[in-house]
Image (tube, rainbow, N blue to C red):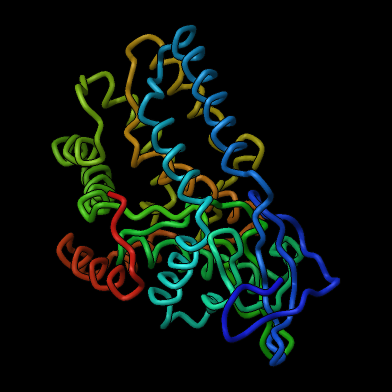
Length: 348
C-alpha cells in the first residue's frame, strides 16, 4: 500500500476487525509511525446503492401495511449519509473536524489524519492504542463512570457547541486508552457517519428540554417544528412527548442514577416504543424529519453505552454544564469557523 506522495507505508500482519465498508489494517510508515489504514472493499458503491434500493422497497412495503410512521424522509437521510460515507477523503475531513472540536478534552483522543497516505478509498490515521470498551464493564464504578463521562463529552461537546454528532454508536468505534496503567479515557476511531446540523436544530433540542422541564407546551411544539415535524395535532404532540420524556428523563432528574434507573436493560425503552407505535397507528401517521434520524440513533446508542457500563452519574448536571451559556448564534459562529478550518460545508 503506497499512495503517491512523499511518504509511504508498509503493511503489518496485525489485522484488526473490519469496518462497515472496508477492512482496517495496522501498518507502519517508513519513518516508524504506527498507522491505522482503512481500505474500502471493492465495488462498495454498487453494493451500497443496491442495499439502498432494497431498503427503499422494504420501507415502501412497511408504509403500505403499517402507515403509522411515514419513512419517506428517513430513507433520504440514510441514503445521503451512506453515500457520503463512501468518500474517505470526506471522512478524513470529519476526523480533522473532531480533532479540532475536541482539542481541549483530555478524556477523548482523536487520531491525526495522514492526507498524503490517503485516497478516496484509503484512509490513513494515527494508530491509537487501547482496549475494547466492554473490557471495563466489570471494572470499579469509578472507572466505569470516568469512561461514561468521556463518552458523554465525545458526544455532547461537538453537538452542543458545534451542532455536529457522531451518528454511529457501535461499541467497536471506541477503545479505552490508559495513563500510568489506569483507564483514562476513550479513543474515537471512526468518522464515516457524521451529521452536521443547522444550528437551529440544536436550539430545538434545548427548547424541548426546557419545555418539558417547565411544562411549557408552546415551547415543546416550537421545538418539534424546528426539528421539521409538521401538521402536529394535540394527539400527535402527546404521542411524541412519550418518547421525548423517555429520552430526556435522565437529563431532567437532578440526582445520581443509572440510565435505566431500575429497569432491566433488555426492557429499557421497550414499553415507550410500544406505546408510541400503538398510539400512532390510531392517531398518525407522522412523518419523521430527516435530521431526526441520526439524532435519535445516536442518543439511543449513547444510552446503550451507559447501560453496558452500568454508569451512575448525575446526567442532569452533565447536560446543564454542556448547555451552559447556550445560544444558537454561538453554535452557528463556532460551527462556521470549525468547518472552514477543515474544509467542510454544512449538510443542513
